[in-house]
Amino acid sequence: MAHAQGKYADFEGLREQAVALRRQGYSLRQIRNKLQVHNKETLQRLVEGEPPPEWTKRPRAKDDLRDRARELRKQGWTYNQIQAELGCSKSSVSLWVRDLPHPEPKCTPEEQRARMNAGLARLRAAQDEERQATKEAAAEAVGELSDRELFIAGVALYWAEGAKDKPHRRTEVLQFINSDANVIRFFLRWLELLEVKRDRLTVRVSIHESADVAAAEQFWAAVTGIDASAFSKATLKRHNPRTVRKNTGETCSGCLVIYVRQSADLYRRMEGAWYGIVGAAPAADLGNRT
Image 1 (cartoon, rainbow, N blue to C red):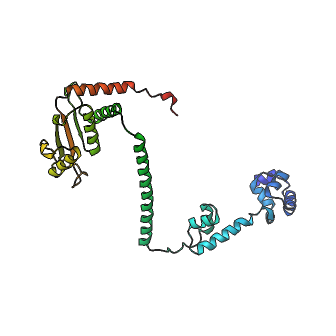
Image 2 (image 1 turned 90 degrees about the vertical axis):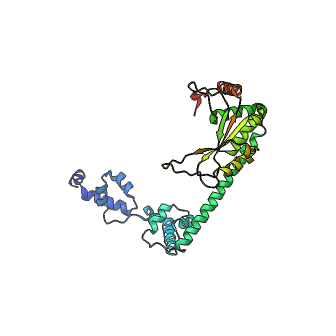
Image 3 (image 1 turned 135 degrees about the vertical axis):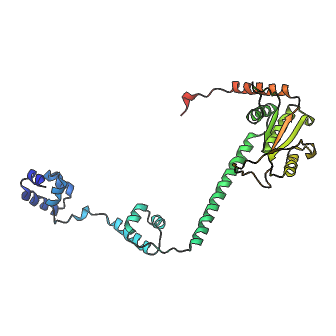
């Protein structure tokens, strides 16, 4: 402070000028620029005791909003309700009414939970509806498949899910396993396109040992149209006590294994077609990625 007063040696003279300017309606900024006093503390001392002019005070509109916000809060309104009613920011509402007691809840905790659950149910229903509409539109956009399109889709599906030949284990045979009934139906349709008769198929269920094997075989018999009596003996998966299984109960139908006898030539055609698909697909232009 001594330094500031030393810089402005004629402090009392400056104060007289500052007070006169203040009474003429000058703001602190205007006084600062007029007298070239840039030390904030010194400037405040120059006008100490002089009230600011009316025109520098906050607009009355804000005061009116503040008063209204406090009135609504006393009536039990929430911050969100006050914000929506007055059209101001939530932070302003908080600043204006934070000293007031919180309003008493208008419903019990059980009623609050019920309202919340009902809101979540409506949200999830809307999300499910939107999700289903997207799926239906996408399904409709596919239209009918040509034989060529069906063949290519089947090759891609087999290469993703079917058994494959390895250099260390020569198994050039079509063998497919899956737990999705629609995937199994599509695979059987693909085999029909390849003119594979049903009498060349060996099918069996692969399922956990604790499941209902007979019920699973009936399920897959309905999916494939093959009588359950024609199924080979089911493969039972042994229980690992360290594994927590979720696919249990009556709805667990396991997987269906489909083996095509005398299918080495078909396997080679499938593998060759897959590499043809890979070679025909254009490489991604990484330079044009945005």
